Structure formats: structure tokens, C-alpha cells
Image (cartoon, rainbow, N blue to C red; front, top):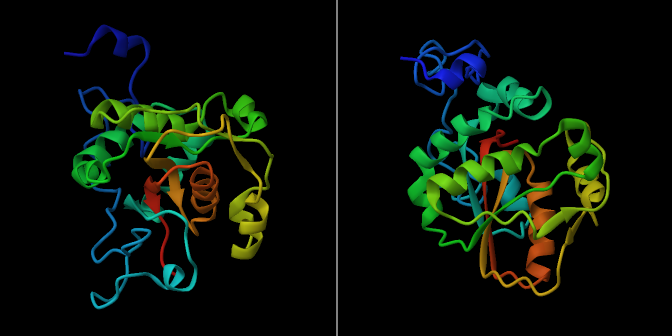
Length: 232
């Protein structure tokens, strides 16, 4: 039986965007489309690596990152259209599905981080006004409820408007993000935090946010994302 509120605000499948009539977060036709990142994983960023004899992907071997490590659930190519809709097409409800899947498959690993808080990667005010919501915060709120880890969206802000990352080279991404984040208040009293974002590509955004948090006194920074790109 469909709940009354679903008649007014029907739930949509995060993959095909069709209305779901059953009590599910994804339609039965699309449930196999999102592909989990296959083993083995990079021990730093969670990208798939070809050899079980390697611990880190090529990027993490070449470039130091400020965060300790992170986890991602899906291969980006399998959910890229859905994530674009989640971010840019007024589909914040997709965050519930992604949080449920992350909690189901990666929940124990995330809890092992023993974090004091989940911190969503913030949007600049101009982008927040345009979208009406921060997809990373939506995801973090659902994860907080499912995993019992406090949400802290009052720690980190994006103080500088930056160019769109996907159009830039790796070096340009790093330069683009320098000085983009700022701590709201001095003396952050958090030992361990988990940054929450939608996608990990080169890690430039999470790395820069981690640097700011560590400089403010945070002891350890991890991350969790819906999806991760491939090792190049």
C-alpha cells in the first residue's frame, strides 16, 4: 500500500527518475545499474587498482594527500548521470538512496574510523543560492541518521568562488582550490572527522579541505563519497 504522502510527493528512482510505486529507494529495473568499486582498492582513495600486489593507485603513489584515507561505493561512470541530477537538477531526494547504500555496504568500515563528526564539503554561497541545497550536506544528513555519527555543518565554509573542477587539469585544480575553504571558528575541538562529498576524482577538493581542518587542530581526516573515478 502506498503511503498518502507518496501520492503528493512521489519517490523517484535515482537512476531512471521514474516514479516508484513500491516501498523502495530504487526501481527493480535499475537496481543492478550502479556498479560497486571492485576489489582490490587503493588503500588511500578507494579507487580500483589492477594488481593485488599494490597498496596504492598511481595517483596516490605520486601525490601526497592530507587525509588519511577514504571510502567510495560506486564506480563513477555507472552513476554519473544520477549524481548530476542529484547535484544540478533539483533531486535532493536521491541522497537518501545513496546514504542507505553506503551505510549498508561501507557502514562498518566508516564506523571503524571512530569519527567525532561528519563534515560535508561546503558550497560557495552563490552556488548554494542557485541550487537551493548542498548535495554533500544532504548526503551527510542521511548518513548521520543511519550511522549515528554527528553532523557538523558549522565548521567549514567555502569562502571563495572557484571554477568548475572538471574542466581543469590536475595542477589547475590544486591552484583553483587554494584558499577556497575557511574554518568558521578557531580551535576546532574535534579529533577525528569524516569529510562527505559526492565524487572523488583527483582528490583536490578533499585534500584542500583536509589541510584547512588539520591546520585548525583536527587530528585525523577521512572521507566518504558516493563514487570514485578510475585510476589514470
